[in-house]
Image 1 (tube, each protein chain N blue to C red):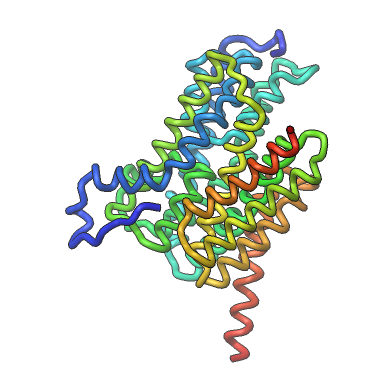
Image 2: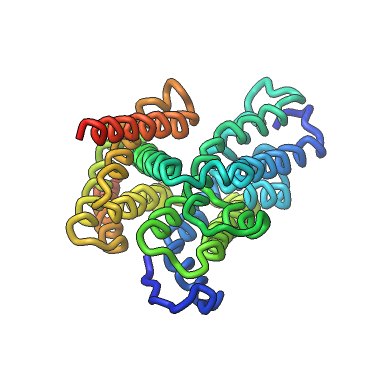
Length: 116
Length: 247
């Protein structure tokens, strides 16, 4: 921590970051009328799923690279394959828990093979 | 996700019933947060924040990447007295995506007062959003605002517990355990996306988000997660509109 940071500045970071994020969540509450239409809702549904896809891909890559330190490309590929397997099983058979466990088992098995 | 039996009226559903649905839906995220936020707690201890400050920041922010970015700024070499302001700005920029997430959830909630709506969406994070949106679209729970508040609250609480534990214990999780729990999030979220398989536009947007966001992050930083999905959503709406006109 930089020596110059005083006690109040650390409080400012904690409170400022927290309250700042809370304020971001308030923005749509103030603009509720504007987002009430069917087409706007459809737009936000699509954007929401785009964000979801982005979260899935970036967090999968991060996890894979975290486990396969020496071979980040292999780690990324393993994590993405596990995600795709879980997704395919969920589309084919339905459910969330069983596909998640199968995908996770593949990821752990690959990790243990790599670490071993 | 847990099943929610039909009720004749939303008002007839008890808070305990809604809690059971929310807890079932959020369980994976809660378990993951307990471990994931230990790392955030460790970082915040290194940056000089005490346990109360860590808990306050985590409870309202509930965003590990944003908090990690702020702590990195505070601990970076050459950080000056103004680093605290840069850290706050960094958190707000990384979390701009919450505006779209809350707007998306809010559009599926019934009209209510400002304060009730705030209770419902005030603690939404990326992970709780991933749980809430598919549930609202596929099988809306009774008392959906209470449901959203409970999912957000439980995720926030587990993040706080994890962060404070990491801060106090300086716990180091074995690599395989940490990575496995980290992988649980994308794998589980992918199965949540799959639940909307019949809605092709949503699948297309999810696919493009998954392809474009990782490519955009090196150039655009965390804002890629906000900007690129918005662009894709706008383009896909225009394409569909064009097709309808031609038809």
